[in-house]
Length: 128
Image 1 (cartoon, rainbow, N blue to C red):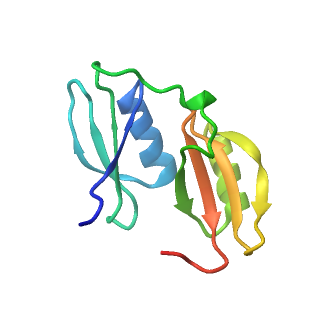
Image 2: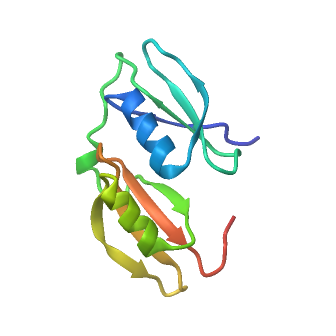
């Protein structure tokens, strides 16, 4: 068994999808132009997919007030500081500063423009 996608409910799926495509490098695998406006987006590996949607039967979580230690979407990056700044310039907001763990990993936490937590990871020893 393997993961096909992780879904995340948002208030404006087309806008969120555009931002993820433009600034995080996702590509559209499938989209629905009517409710729930689902966008299935694949990362650059083509092996990991997220679904961004809005189903009126449920409430959009308050991501902006959710501690990012509870839930976040983590990305492997080569240059944490440069990627962090590029995303801040594109409308993301910082959550703390860049940290280096005892294992030598460099990590930065941000929120996308809708408040969803995003982590940037440069691992001293790659995990995947």
